[in-house]
Length: 112
Image 1: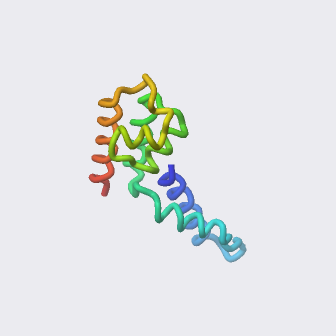
Image 2: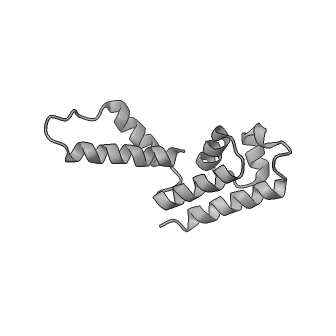
């Protein structure tokens, strides 16, 4: 998930800022990646990120589905199936998928 990458990169940047003069400067790729994940990350709160990951992991999603759902945040089950054709399977009913998406949106709206 982009939000997890953002947390890791921010931590690394913080470590670098607190380091001695002998540390190397952050590379341009690092800076661009941090800017990207900061812009496109949907979640800011570590507890929310952990909660979303746990929720999606419990529901038998493959890793790429988990990351894609958390990064794209589709509004409807139909939209999620269009973006991720692997979700159009008997593993989930339309109602289950919609309930899950609603719960993710709810967690996102209540993050601090």
